[in-house]
Amino acid sequence: MDEEQPKSNNPGTDDSEIVRRFVQKKIFEYVMVRGQRQPIQLPEKTVLDLTKLVDKALFNSASTLDKYMDMDTLEKRLMNFLRHLRVGMKNQRLLHQQQQMNSSGNIKMETFLFTSESVNEGHPDKLCDQISDAVLDACLAQDPDSKVACETCTKTNMVMVFGEITTKANVDYEKIVRDTCRKIGFVSDDVGLDADNCKVLVNIEQQSPDIAQGVHGHLTKKPEEIGAGDQGHMFGYATDETPELMPLSHVLATKLGARLTEVRKNGTCAWLRPDGKTQVTVEYQNDNGAMVPIRVHTILISTQHDETVTNDEIVADLKEHVIKPVVPENYLDENTIFHLNPSGRFVIGGPHGDAGLTGRKIIIDTYGGWGAHGGGAFSGKDPTKVDRSGAYIVRQAAKSIVANGLARRCIVQVSYAIGVPEPLSVFVDSYGTGKIPDREILKIVKETFDFRPGMISINLDLKRGGNARFLKTAAYGHFGRDDPDFTWEVVKPLKWEKA
Image (cartoon, rainbow, N blue to C red):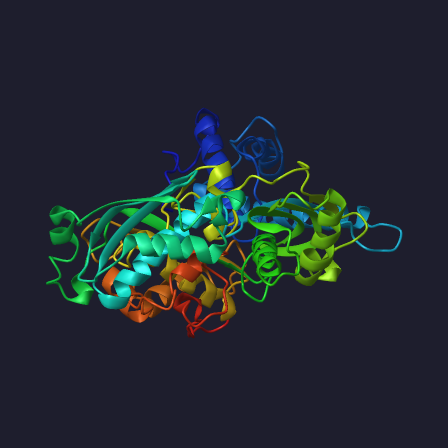
């Protein structure tokens, strides 16, 4: 045995404490480690309390351990006892389910609530994301090797673009700012910003030569040699609860926001203004690690509006023209809660209402609070910045795992060091839903995906700008979108055999 054993092969009364500690250790390892796979997870105190049961079952005594002749026999008997214990625990759970049945014979499922939010393209933070990505598009369209780290901030009557950009492109930053604001709908001070008359400040410098030589060798390195633009860790997530393989709470919150913009721009709800926020709470059941949506518990919409509309009109229009086309009817019931402009008045919005800054809506950009996040923002960054490219490749990996049937739910992490091409680590967790062990899924992922930044750029075609390619990502989510420009959403075939 690999574990540390008592010194004596024939433990007597003097060795009882040593043997007892050995028994405790085996119980903890067996129940907790194996429990991760089939899942029985107990608090440490409960595990240690089981020692008393072991004493009685193995030694017919609660206090003596001197009836065993050797440690091999002890371990065999202990493992046999624990196997019986696990069967008993499983039967207890089945009995508990039977006791939870209601009069109709249906099991009362244990459920939980989870909430995700989104914001419209006119939210000041999202305005900044879109301007930063519009600058990136303009640079890459003329020079695919552009190195861009563009930030934007905004407040009443002012937009500032700043950062580090090294490019051969001829970019009119002020024009990009005004065009982006105008397209969103910021055409007067009344709606929060006047695209044609606001102040535009620009403070752009070139990329640090120290970073340039370490990452791409001043553009002399081959693609496979290009290092990560910075250290960091990124996460990709996928779940089979929606066709997009995205969390339902996030999908609904995002689509409600997009629908608000659609009915504003097409005139269906002419009283709408650009700024707004949405939030959806979904009731879920945990099906052995997979997330199963049961119903929509709460829908919250706070949208900017003009002076003429009444609260009753807002509620009626939002239910009819926004919620009804977006939220499937089977998720709504008589108990669903609606908070529609609960503050009662939202006329002042956009940069007039709040300051905005690039990179402050990273959860909205990704998975709505599900999975995990490494903390790095996306917008305004070229693909050598692994905050963006690394997050894109692990989304593709996670989505491919679920789409190929290896798991119902999955998270993938990758990490980098600045200037180093190869990732420091790649991690896969299927939350217990994997059809094969996670270590085998990880092996398949490493064989299928190239996590080097230079190769990510090539394989996902991330150096192609223009046509609002990255601008589109900056509002309503980077993932789960059906658009050919979202190359990281393409599922790759994975070869595997069912166990």
